[in-house]
Image (cartoon, rainbow, N blue to C red; front, side, top):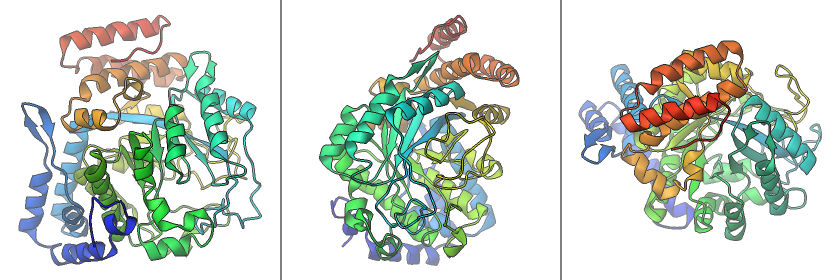
Length: 482
């Protein structure tokens, strides 16, 4: 029985409900009147309280995804752009992954870290090595990290993860500082989530991989991750443990994408129904080549056009969520989907354990990579590329450090009020990057962009203060925030 308020995985991600949804979507994919009604419902509206956006149910959004009428797809893209602009403007938040350990006891068939893979060397960073990685990331200009580790209670216990977080936050190198650590580790207990919260993490991220239970159990034949319910219910435990911001995601290509899409939105609806706040972020990774993993083995891969449509439909359905795309995708793909809903991207990423320290910008070790990096540009190149496209690369972490998380963030985001602080914060953190890390060419582009974007801050007092802060950054001060 489908029940979004249930705490049981098979009730809030209900197989029969998904099949009925897909059947309904297939039957109505050419129903122009219904599709127009759905698009109209999702359109942002300005009210006395700000911007309001209704979002869509998993069933309504599935109709849009199933629709193959070209003119309707263009309307979806146009609406996705409108919603993205309304809530996130032209800001793109920057981050980098930091792989701590590839020891893992699971046997996930799509991941090279599975314990039966004998060709990949196993490595776990010491705290000294973590510190060196952090310095290397700070020297690139990063302020926000997502830490990654395989599941291994002996080699990667929660105590190790907590020690790494403490080390990361403790490193102050030149003008560098990691101001937000997001955590992508295996499902764990409420007690351990409380420990992560106390350690000062930002978002807890856990990819579902697939919402199809039978496929999930086949793809995870051994190890703790085999337990579908324990994995799927992890976000409820995380929120019970006090973590305000959680991030969802599926690995597109493992199962039929329409099934995954419906399951993903049902999970978002469940979090909203039970906890009063939906996912802080949604990630959209696709299966990629890696050591002993061939993506062609999976029969459900999706092309770039379908991928773009999925992103647009998620943006329409869950308008307030941050959307993440990583360096799994190449420059061309990332360019296409930025306007359709993406609000966070990685840059200069290494997916290997110890992949940053001691390597030149154009060097990257491959022996412990989790997956091939398609976009291999440096952070500086990605920052300049974004600015050339008219975006503001943002290194902002202000909301997290000002306590604007969970329902407090969402209440501001849902009404559009979050932009009153996000826009100047983005410009100030970009200025920090330009002063401390940018190449001369990137700095020239960025200074011009900041000057133009300052004019767009509507509140005169905020505009004047932001300009003063930016001048202070030029004179050597750091870490201003609204």
